[in-house]
Length: 57
Image (cartoon, rainbow, N blue to C red; front, side, top):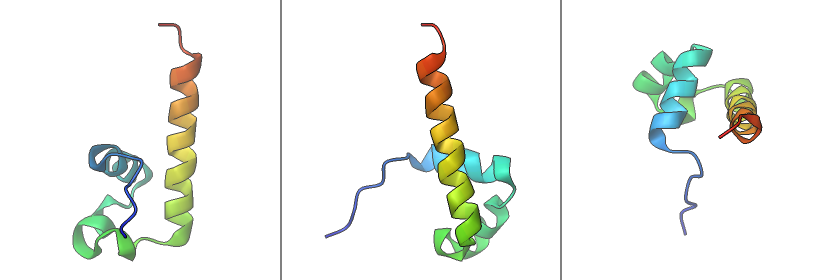
């Protein structure tokens, strides 16, 4: 059974562009990124979520 992703495709692509490895994703797919880049991507997503919960609505 396939696991459903938590982050949208658009969010993952945005973060990959911000962190500078989107070109690898385009050429090799998500399996081509380094584990360090994947970890940094998760860290950035968590930071973004924390900022959203702290900002006034």
